[in-house]
View 1 (cartoon, rainbow, N blue to C red):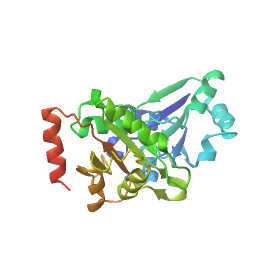
View 2 (view 1 turned 180 degrees about the horizontal axis):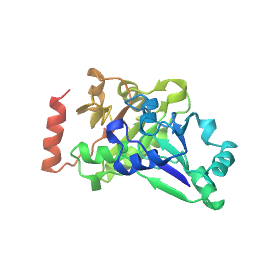
View 3 (view 1 turned 45 degrees about the horizontal axis):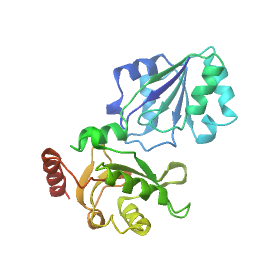
View 4 (view 1 turned 60 degrees about the horizontal axis):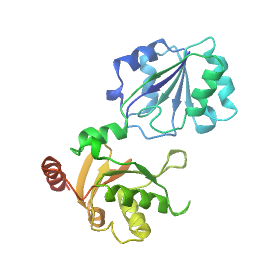
Length: 252
């Protein structure tokens, strides 16, 4: 069997279901490149010292490596352990589909993701979030589609989660300050600088920080190290949302 298992962002986030699977695993591939993790990932070994552990780079879980993993899963319990929730991003979809086509049984054990935590923790109504986007470093390309999505969400009075470029294998994580500068450079309509936004640093970690202000002002505050994200807030808030924004403004 092949199990895709969400680890959340800390050992504290591992569910009882995930723990049961880890204890039974023969082989555990630990995804080290999709996202950052609060605790050392090698501490996962404490749950099942007898299993084989592979701390996997992208090439270990994609492309030609897929066939080898599927062959292992025909006779063993193989776990793909992923920070966050395994399929909030599409990183491992090809492996999932290949396993199904090969007749290998697949199970998904969900974990906490940034998206679900943002919906729950920021005090903004979950049904008022529009399409979320990823802001990449401008050296890759200028992502005008990102600001177009933000504009579209604002026109519909919806909030936008902006995930920031994260290249774990290269040791790069975009910061809130960088993201604000990039968005302001891409903002060809000149709408975003005065827009209310929330800077989110290490959500769910022990030293998380959440700060609300105008987007252009978020660069004035100090944050713990990445992972960082942004939320561009709708111009139309209900009274409860307004109270939460006041609270996050006071934490800057």
